[in-house]
Length: 157
Length: 196
Image (tube, rainbow over all chains, first blue to last red; front, side, top):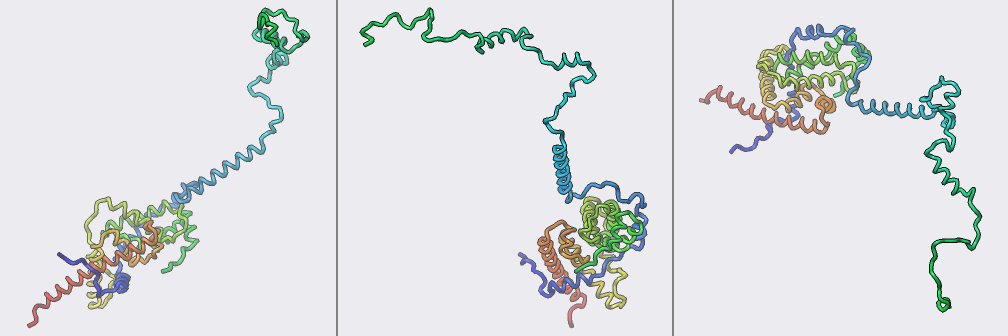
């Protein structure tokens, strides 16, 4: 069984670091720069475009700004909206009709004109008490119903 | 290590697509990008292709460059992404070690040249034996000279992780070099033969 390998004690990390830093760099092909220069795109095609997608790290900031702009525009719209107490015209109504037509369209029906509502109105008028007879106690009633036939006098004691 | 800030005029020129600014960027950074990719791929042809792809991608993205890192770090980031993408592609088999021995940047003195070439060859061999992730940390920090914070931007890792992984990679390299040294000593002894 082989013992676990340990770093060479003769070489300190500092020495190895200095050896690495002094390592001769690999040669660079002489024509590489010329090839790279030839591959530079023409100025018109590598100019900064009008809009570029923001980098991923800035996208939250862009969304935040868009949200704030939307909220501000909503607030401005609410502030400059016409006062609700003013007359609001219904855009669905025609505007070029003559007076009689428009009056016919917008005027409410008079009470009692509708055949469906007449019986209900009669009942309602009766309940309002306009024609109700005066009330007096004891009631001079001739009710068909009686609570009892007769009460014996001994029970009244 | 502190690096000079990028020239604002150069940045403006790049963002507006100025050809001279693009040429200046290439002139200042293409060697660094190429060497980084050579160390990562260990394939000079693939490194050339990826260098061209890196700059092509840079022209496409330059309008969105925020300037939060240096141009060098930004180019390293693009190059690293290209390398990761290129790992799926078929690799051609060209060894970096052969190029290291014939490097024109080696010293002129024949003895020093031989020693340096031998040392470089052993270091490159040990680097090649590191796994790709460890090699990336060592190359970025010690060979490309990036700071830990710049490496964190390139690799998209926390700075603490970058420091720890770099130390671990260096330890792995020391182990590999220890094996190299013992093998090297054994071969030298065998070459000399028995003492009579």
